[in-house]
Length: 225
Image 1 (cartoon, rainbow, N blue to C red):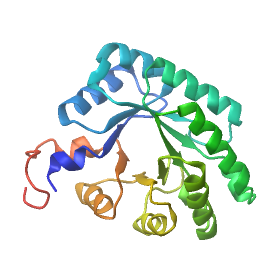
Image 2 (image 1 turned 45 degrees about the vertical axis):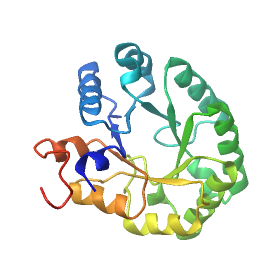
Image 3 (image 1 turned 90 degrees about the vertical axis):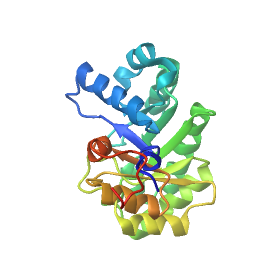
Image 4 (image 1 turned 135 degrees about the vertical axis):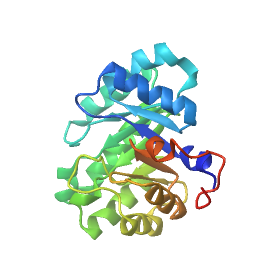
């Protein structure tokens, strides 16, 4: 796989609480230069990014982030505003307390509601694997599949752990055929990026991918640079 193809699966991310407009501009300009799948940015910056860069960028944002325990109506309002401001993709966090309480139907119902809010826009569901048992992870695969979401995503990057090879393999076994996988959190090298793509992830959430590739010809095959 060429480096450029690897980058085309990256959601180039800046979600720190202290992100300045200069940080967001740098992110967006890197995403345009390297043709990443999207920029994943805080909701407060969506309108300004859309007005500044227009159709040059695919804009992704987060909802119920990073803890997931906002009520469904609040998450729905976030989605509606994000789409109005120019966002194309939504990464929502499940209510992790509901998962830990075993209330999987409630989690599924929330995802159904939020997917309706998204309409044709992509919905990725962050299940925050670092807090879940294997049984709970499998239950989330089922909930995400049955609710009609587009992706299951491993992590916020703000929890106690990020994406792992084992979790991605578990997802592969238990999601439906229409659900894609996004790995996020702890993708800290080009080798990590390649590994998760080879495992079958369609998207990788990371703030570091462009940095990995700054001094590499993007048309070079990975492993030959």
